[in-house]
Length: 69
Image 1 (tube, rainbow, N blue to C red):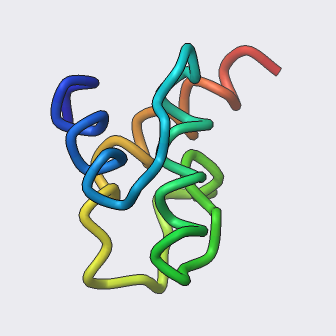
Image 2: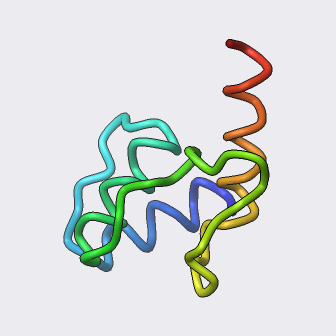
């Protein structure tokens, strides 16, 4: 999902987007919506949150984190 779309969702949830990066902004949205702030933490392409709109980006960023480590 593009940052422009994420910022729009954040604003709809009453959040100020400021200069937060994608990971931190999505985590703030997740918290505001009453969900786990687990974005970019999926390991081995596994996530039990089947209805999560962030899933594709989550897996991609989680893989990048592992590659950097």
